[in-house]
Length: 152
Image (cartoon, rainbow, N blue to C red; front, side, top):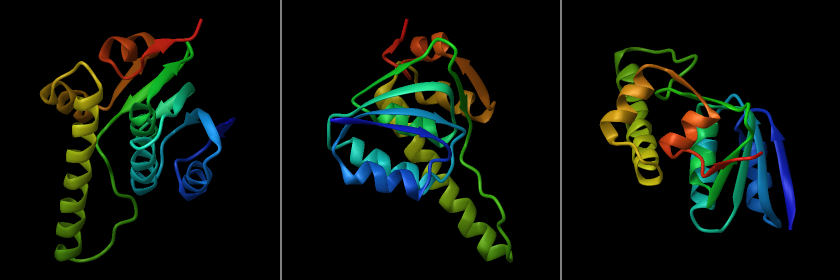
């Protein structure tokens, strides 16, 4: 089995690589990206045994991918960024904005469910951390249960 090394956005390109199969480990350095792509990857990771190593940065939707894996370890200098889902470039009237707000709420609920299921913190804790746009060190991520270990 091979390793996927991905340094870039969580996007359809990564979805394609993940779903091709034939890999056992994903090395991930990402500022995040498309929540729909992240969800597709998480759905895949929920069905198979795969491992993630996060290095450098694991921001935004990349954190969802890391948490969804069978196991996840971080390099000592890795940083995490946790925040609520956001929409960029939304235009339109009040109905469009209302629909977009609802969609963001759906994604936020899914993300909190994922974090609560896989970590040691409560829903209230995650709500506070996400709303505060929280940066975490690898050690803090380990303490919170985002990762299973730190590479030495």
